[in-house]
Image: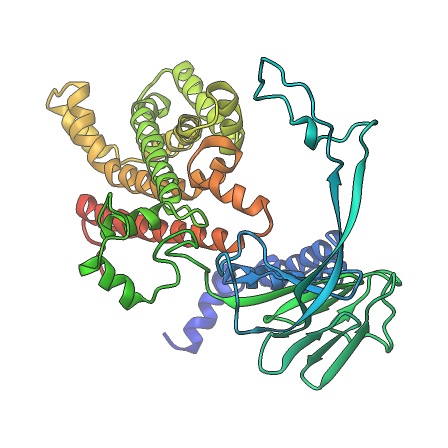
Amino acid sequence: MNAIDMEMVAARYPALVTRPGWQRLRIPVVLTVTTLYLLFSFWFFSFAQVFSTANWGIAGAYLADWVSYEERPDIRIEADGAMRVVFPNNSSLGADPHPDWLTKDTATITRAVEVQAAAKAAPAEKSSTFNFMAPDPAAVATPDQPVNKMVKTIDETVVTRASVRFSGSISADITATRVEIRNGGDTLTLPLGGADIQPVAPLPDWASQPYAGGKVIVSLGLPGWMEVEPDRVKIRKRFLGWANFIFDTNSRFFGRTTGEVVSLIASGPRLDPGQSNASLALNDVLYNPSWQHLDVWTKLLQTIVMAFVGTLFAAALSFPLAFVAARNITRSRIANQVAKRCFDFLRSVDMLIWALFFTRAFGPGPLAGMSAIFFTDTGTLGKLYSEALENIDNKPREGIRSVGAAAPAVHRFAIIPQVLPVFVSQALYFWESNTRSATIIGAVGAGGIGLKLWEAMRTNSDWENVAYMVILILIVVYIFDTLSNVLRSKLIGPVSR
């Protein structure tokens, strides 16, 4: 076709070569409306203010807490200038910590200590009865027998100076009269000994004082942070990794190298006469009080079972109900509407709301979670299945009917082969998705690892435990995704390329 022919066709059928004006403007209009909508959303939700007032430092600290842990010694300064370094009872360093990053200068001083002693009671006439619950009269002060106060001098070893090394360029020196913090090329000196803290120079940008004379908060980035008060300095030193993930401080294997642990398990003398070293090591790992591995894994298994059973029951019930809801299968309009409205009711209530309802009905536990998944997925799968049935090809049905087959045979050989791949694919997807959903509903008392995750998040200090459980959930979701793909290919057939 040459140019003359094209002109003749265009003259005879202009609609073929010339688009209407509204079609030419379709793309610019869509782009303009989308841009205006985004600008409106940006203004309506105050994104600029949110981003400007967001505390990104706190967000970074939370993220660091997922992959690190803190050691939290307190350096307490007493009235006579003596200092004490106190670690918390749950320190990951054990009962008597002496880390190499905290050095102490000590001295022996003579201190006056006030003690109390009751005056010696006069001999009392012995009674013929004796009561174990009654106190000794000689040890109890009475109005007639006042307590004598005595001042006793003792020699005690105290800390006179403490040095904390956060990193190669960040350190802090603490004495009873001052705190000196070196951060790179900057040095911050804070005098102590008074009723409040008055910095001798303006604070650098990595230190802040919420109110005049109050404590000074020193943010040192990933290595940690400090809080300086007139009579106490709180040290928070951060380390990458998870502390005591295998053995807790109470374990007899704590502090040993991997080679020592393997040697003890293989051929070492028994640490506990009642059980082997291998059994003791396994018991210490499973019942690690800091990480609670066995409890976490048990709750994870509850989540998996909860998702599987809830999805299985939902798919089993929605399968026959979908045939009732499909207009081309069941010709009764009343039956169609009743089934579809039932699906609408079940899926219009969110799974989390169903979980709250069943938690009140059955109490906290996996049964409430399974019921919530079952109700929600019955409505969703029923709608999807019925729509798949309404879109089948009617020619196979007509062919089987033409040979006089009964209705069950028509369904079995003409309908089910068309929709079964869709049904299986959707059921497998919901099984995979419900593993994640079961984690969320577990947080409201429906059992599983979700409740454990919420408990760890609520403390606002065990973020490494949160990261541990999140990683376990990701691994399970990945395994289920792979497994569902394998099952789908086995049942439906491989994807054609």
